[in-house]
Structures are given as structure tokens and as C-alpha cells.
Amino acid sequence: MKIMLLGAPGAGKGTVAKLLTALDGSVQISTGDILRAEVRAGSDLGKKAQAFMDAGDLVPDEVIMGMMEKRLQEPDCQKGYLLDGFPRTIPQAEALKVLMAKIGIDLDLVVNIDVPRDVILDRLCTRRTCENGDCQAIYNVKSNPPKEEGKCDKCGAAVIQRADETEEAITHRLETFTEKTAPLIGFYEKEGKFKNIPAISSDEVVNGIKDSLGI
Ligand code: AMP
Image: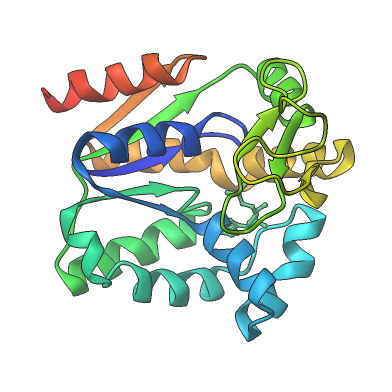
């Protein structure tokens, strides 16, 4: 399947993408994950991106488009792809349309995961992540804490609060979302193949997507 997942930070795009990859082997393409890997590797791209990310700002469109032009042409995308966290601005959406026509790929569905703001805020402030870049397991101090406090169940590395998940950075990321990313909903409504799914549980979102695709 070839799906774009829209939604605020903390709406559950990553969780839904992981559940969908298990259905048919489509690959999850998370621009946030790719950028964090570049930061960890200390690459030029990572160096360009880090300050924007730590502040909860968007990385410039041209950096993201260069990165995605490469990623979308890798062989694993032939099985299908789940775009998670991309595009984040109208210029990215417009550039993606041109890129898709150029490399001959398309989308089956654009989904907006519509979660109330109070739920999002609570989720992000209580989210913790395994700091091991190869693991990155996600926990929640309230609903899904690691068995041993501060230690990842899967790999034993430290479980931390991401630099961009402090209350200040989260507030800023949500403002950025409202200003720059939410307008994508109107953009894709006009383009067609758009579905809004108001749901808090990831399973509900996955079922909504399966219904839309008739699978
Ligand atoms: P995420 O894990 O998707 O919330 O992304 C973490 C951070 O990476 C964001 O707050 C941005 O700084 C950056 N980022 C991820 N995807 C994009 C994108 N498509 N455009 C610009 N910045 C992005």
C-alpha cells in the first residue's frame, strides 16, 4: 500500500505505520527517524538539521526534499510505502507532487489521524524513547512504562525524554503544526483520495484504512 499519514505530533502516525507494515511489507518512511539517524551519525545533513529539531522547528524544505528524493527511489519502496511525518508544509506537498510524477510513483490514500489536542499534549509530555538508535522503543510513563524504571525492556539502554519532547518544545511543535502542517488537510481534500479518521486508538485507525482500501 502507498499511504500518506497526516496528523499532529503524537497523533500516532508512527504506531499506525508500524501496524500497517506488518500487513503487507510496505516500508515505513519517517522523516523524523531518518533525520535522528543522520544527527546520531554526525553527517552533514544531521548537522544542518539538529538545531531546528531540538528547537521544535521544521527542517528547511529543500533539505527534506533532497533526502526524500533519494529515499523514495530505494528498491524497498517498490513493495509500498507509508509516509510518516512527510510532507509537513504546502511547499513540500507541491514538491512531492512534482517528484512523484518525475519518478513515476503515486499514492493510494492520504489519511489524517484526527486526535483531540488535550490527548496529544498528554501523550507527548509522558512519552519516553529508548536512546539506542537501533532500538528506539517508545514508552509512556503513565500507560506503558518500562518494567525497570529508565531502562529499555528490549535492549537495556536508557529510556529518555527526547530533547524536542519537553513541554516548551512540544508547545512550539504544536503551534508549528497548526500554522504550517494543518493546511495540508485542505490541500489533499482537493486532490482526492483523502480520508479523515477521528480516532484515539491506533487499531481503529488501521481498521479505517483497511475499510477505505477494501482489504
Ligand atoms: P517527528 O519525529 O516526525 O515528530 O519529527 C521530529 C522533528 O524532525 C520535527 O520536529 C522536525 O524538526 C523534523 N522533521 C521531521 N519531518 C520533517 C519534515 N517533513 N519537514 C521538516 N522537518 C521535519
